[in-house]
Image (cartoon, rainbow, N blue to C red; front, side):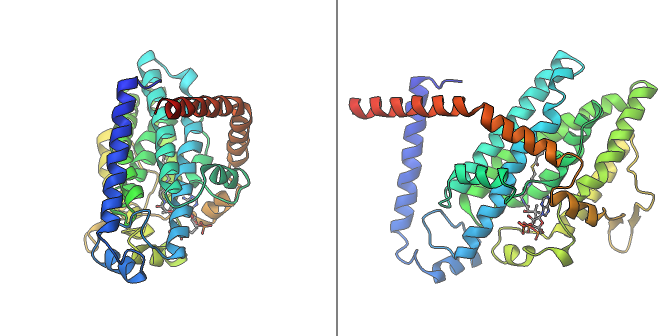
Amino acid sequence: MPVEPGAQSLLDQVAEAERDLVDAAARDRPDAESDAYFDAVIAADQKIEPRDAMPDAYRKTLIRQIAQHAHSEIIGMQPEGNWITRAPSLARKAILLAKVQDEAGHGLYLYAAAETLGVDRAELYEQLLSGRQKYSSIFNYPTVTWADVGAIGWLVDGAAIVNQVPLCRCSYGPYARAMIRVCKEESFHQRQGFQSLYVLARGTRKQRDMAQDAVNRWWYPSLAMFGPPDGDSTHSAQSMAWKIKRYSNDDLRQRFVDMTVQQAEVLGVNLPDPDLRWNEERGHYDFTQPDYEELMRVIKGDGPCNRERMANRRNAVESGAWVAEAASAYAAKHNNRQEAMA
Ligand code: BYC
């Protein structure tokens, strides 16, 4: 949607004020170039900003994680996008359209956050398309019935919130700030998924079965979203020391299970784990772990829908190239005009 001229100038003023703030902050920190400064900021639980000195490995880790996160949001539009034309009512269609658009927006905030680390967005797209950068395993599973849309909202967005709320306190400023907005939208997504399943779980026998079947299929892939168990997680220790990650994969998985069991009771669906039970001693639910060999296969490209997801993405890039070219030409024309007027 075009931005009104007045609104655009307001946005420009805000952007300029933010740039001034960053410049002023940098001037106030004469030692911002040093490793000692980086270590002190991390120790004090403050934020590292784009112009601050940072270890190369910290920068690389952030680019890897933020890019993977951005790609997940973009590829994540496909499973639910598959149901936009077949949503059961106009209201459900409008809600689903808005949700899928939100995911595109999340991808864009995250690519913008990655760019503050000195990497080009086109380069990141290229790495996704060539398979050198990953996206979340969860989006390689099919959405075979309408209830899958509810199950994704409830379980997948629910898992995403548990994983992402701590990222709002990530040590890298632009990522942390992007996550605040993403999390607000994700919590709306989670509630709409819960509400959609709630209606199905109180519907006809067929609708109830459909809701239960969707929960059965999405439960273990949602647990696997949190990544390999702590013992096999290659990046966790360093990412936690840098305060990029605040909790380990297993801690977040446990938090998700504890939260979701009670929601399943309210919904009236069963979680498909016969060994799920409260452990008084631990103060947590015991549960069956997901199949981590399957997770690794899916991450490596051999899940049920990996090929289809990447083919759709490639096709979207190729068939949408003219739109990108036209938008760039328009932006260049607009900039030239602004410069000439100035
Ligand atoms: N899928 O050392 P580890 C959404 C990889 S979008 C694929 O534990 P780390 C939504 C990992 O990258 C949600 N790969 O890694 C959108 C690493 O491989 P490399 C997306 C995975 O980074 C639309 C290797 O396994 N969320 O919510 O410390 C609709 C070893 O793992 C996965 C994010 O991206 C996986 N599940 O921890 C609805 C959140 N798990 O790079 C919803 C941000 C692990 O060494 N990311 N790998 O080759 C993170 O929080 C962390 O990166 C992870 C992994 C917890 C995912």
